[in-house]
Image (cartoon, rainbow, N blue to C red):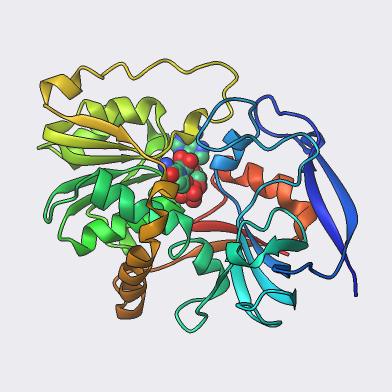
Length: 333
Ligand SMILES: NC(=O)c1ccc[n+]([C@@H]2O[C@H](COP(=O)([O-])OP(=O)(O)OC[C@H]3O[C@@H](n4cnc5c(N)ncnc54)[C@H](OP(=O)(O)O)[C@@H]3O)[C@@H](O)[C@H]2O)c1
């Protein structure tokens, strides 16, 4: 048997926001799997800010997507043919499936999902890579202590919403930052003690008002002016967790550096970056912890699911930078 698969390939490297002409959308025939391989019919694709970085031809923690290559993307789907002993037809699996309808992958690169614990989109969000990022970024890099004051940006997004809820469960005072009144209202529903709409500006004053004694952890997902506002409001011994800087991902020149970096000296603070893949061996620990929070109701896993199939991938990716998502952004195929 063969399957016809529509796929999204990188046609040229983007400048700024990736426009439609960055991509070629083509069809290909997918054959029966060779020994050790599995054919997956992709059901949900994960949209990740990091994808924008993978399009740049620069040295990074992972090689860039090459021109002509199918766009790298995490996803979930159903096994439709298997030549691997661990995967049977009908199993629902996750892995780096790529932006396409059918993916042929080595069986050992796929993980079977426990759908009794959560639906497929949640396995791309709170129980997927973003949830792992929140967990290890906060507990390991941030060295979270019970009762601390935690500031988190992009707090209504996939990583940020899990950071906020883990910190809340640890008895912290949590200040979430997001764009717009609806997201701010959702952050309060999640239990954030304070919620800041960064679009209202005057960020240093807003953070100071929310955390008059300063913050112990700033979990930075956005960079830019909010990073400076956070640096201006640290407590002694603070940790700035450099998770991402989405505000600059489409910039065509390097942004100004943090103006307030001397706060790290003044407050005996540190700022440390990390890549979640370095914790891959410990994902089961984070899945167990977040899974038990989902089960006992202390963590709400939310996703924004876009329709439109794989052809909607270019627009869905741009949506991340417009903040169309509350919780994890996924595309249904
Ligand atoms: N270090 C790692 O290993 C690792 C792993 C995963 C993710 N990350 C990083 O974590 C961050 C969050 O990723 P995510 O997957 O959870 O995405 P997300 O927060 O679910 O989605 C991105 C959000 O960023 C916000 N945003 C977009 N442009 C912005 C701007 N100019 N200024 C401020 N906010 C902006 C939008 O929310 P608003 O509507 O609130 O603006 C949007 O919803 C990203 O920086 C990503 O690169 C790092």
